[in-house]
Image (cartoon, rainbow, N blue to C red; front, side, top):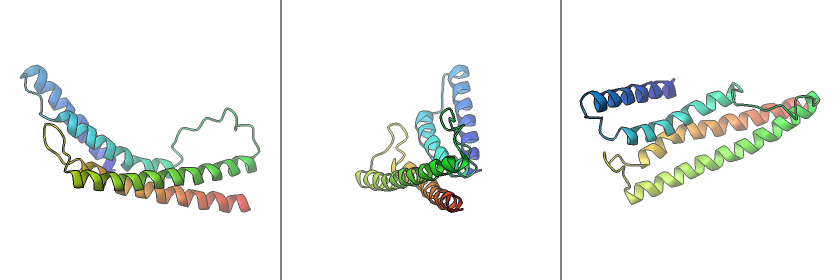
Length: 145
């Protein structure tokens, strides 16, 4: 829900900025910066729910005819790899946020601290890691049956 509300806000802001640009020759200052930061946060807000509901795109060209047990084994391996990647992303978001905080780096026009985007995306990335580990354990249990 938070990601959806954030995206609706981005769309509204972009609409106002475009209208301001074409009607009054006065776009919203820094709209690109806000969009850039907010979209990154929104993506990490959507990812855990999407993954938990198996909403990711799956290409079954090669695996569609596999036995159920082999598909479950492949899904188990996928969950383990994706958990590792999600953990890596979470760790790097944290480290990157610390670096941006220490460097006091800000956006060009509005001067928004860049570290805010990193740390705002961090809970979603951590939740994604948790969901991936849960998915791995769930699939591993199913594989053992």
